Length: 186
Image 1 (cartoon, rainbow, N blue to C red):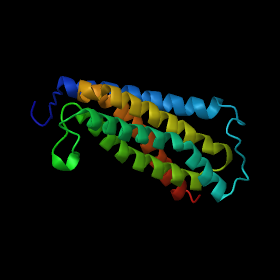
Image 2: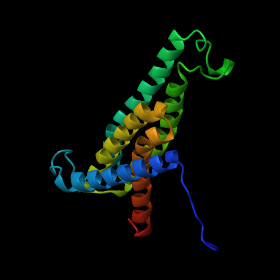
Image 3: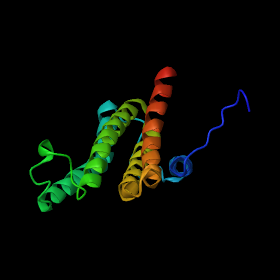
């Protein structure tokens, strides 16, 4: 048909679309349900928390994000130790098949960690009281996304799509909410 774009997606692209839609639905449901149903006293939040206390809260929540990143570094290090091809280090050649997936997961996790951590700190500066509950919920989504990404990576693009989309959803919500709060003058 003239004037219309006919788009045919590959099976990988369709797998990415399905996995991403599922991840976005899970992220929305988890954030909504967690925010509404978590007991108010669970994180000992109060409206009188000053800026420093809110930042400290985010830092404490993000320790799990950095533990994940440290685990990724450890996985690559262990892989290099046991691989004669890789033991010299990345400066001397590309990773072998023995550690290629681990190195890719580490690189992507480093990138995502920087974005997530920044978003969580910005939110800590803007959110008040019980609103801060969103930060540990975002951390939980991030971690589930990273684990799914790592386990699905070797299965190809559609295998890692759910984890990537769940990770991205937590980051997009962080920045979207932060921008919205800045626009309304918080």
